[in-house]
Length: 309
Ligand SMILES: C[S@@+](CC[C@H](N)C(=O)[O-])C[C@H]1O[C@@H](n2cnc3c(N)ncnc32)[C@H](O)[C@@H]1O
Image 1 (cartoon, rainbow, N blue to C red):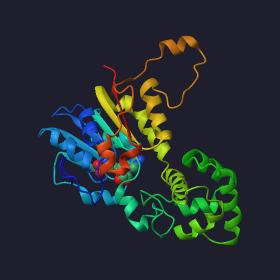
Image 2: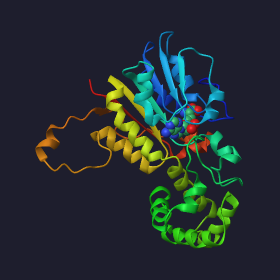
Image 3: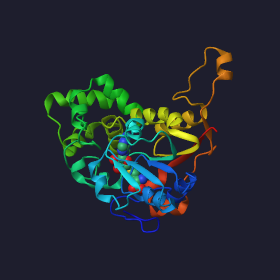
């Protein structure tokens, strides 16, 4: 596993490393959660600050992350989706934790392994699953979703400007040809590509990846568990990579609500307890220097909140 100043470039370079680990305000004997272990960069930073009695519970739904596990008995690895956070903490007999970090999305490793099907750079099966135990793949979405569902998906998750035309083309074309690989899919899209093809394909692939892995559903479930999982004063630090995720985190940290819900009863809106206190009024962004060294950091935003005392 990568230590703080010995970042392994091979698997994943942690983004906003110092900022996010410092945001957890680590107590040496505390219990912490890394929801997204990946290459173990952030976990390494947390372990460095923990004393011998501290504990780190690390989740990752991708079996590949196991290869980065350090030989450290303070770390417990849980190869599961972080949406099951409370359940697995209970199994470990942990009632609440002192801090939690989530560095959302995919790792560089997942992008760089051609056969995972995440990257437009390679040809492979249209897969995109972070967790191989789950059944839905990108191929299934292209083959089976209705035109309307495809339209909504590409518009919402990819901000594809001609999402309606794209959805229509997919539905027409899939009658004529079976699409199982990235190159077949890209060929199918050729007539509708708008602007820079790489940018267009990247938006389309992002939308499919979010759907395959139900990334927003998992994030919502994680957020809803924060008030009960954190100890009073316990910190949550979440790094997002696109506006849909960031909006969810921002709203939940501010109001304890997933969407901007309108309170029907104005008295209730005054009295409703907000479970978290926002620590970062504005998101923390990577420095120019970090973005130069690690272009993947460009869209990262870190938000931090604490459970109210
Ligand atoms: C951006 S990488 C994290 C990198 C890590 N912070 C590091 O320093 O190497 C995201 C990781 O989280 C995992 N992941 C994403 N969503 C997840 C979820 N809902 N549950 C569990 N793991 C998830 C991915 O498999 C990937 O390995």
